[in-house]
Length: 190
Image (cartoon, rainbow, N blue to C red):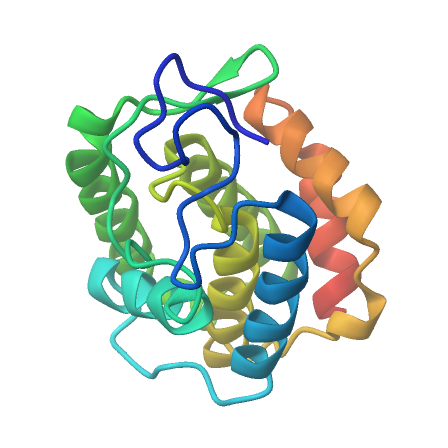
């Protein structure tokens, strides 16, 4: 769970995120979120132009049945462990920068295999460091990456995804070491 000093996204005195059903027990919320997001993942993801609006629409699609703030930038400062994510007042500018860079890279279409892996790892690493939403960032990142890779002509084989090693690679990338994330991406798109 992410921690903040005073978290306006949680019910007072708890770490349970405010949700559409008003669930105040974490296990109940986890079960509801798992069911709701599984349903949304079984549906086609929103189509778009692979920009910020598209990314926000994907997050809203996945989490909109659970949280009112789905697809909206967070307004609270958050960290995971000792890693502080982008301050809310800088999220919009950083998201614009990251997605402008992706556009300038032609959404990685036609990039040779090794360059695709390196640039998509950099994109995911920077997107993760911004962490624009209060929760659900990793799942939104992976969903967007799958669409991006498919558009770039490198459809990912998500059955090859090993959640623990991918998460460990994302953490290493957050710390500036992207080589493990590059290897994870190579495994998914080879």
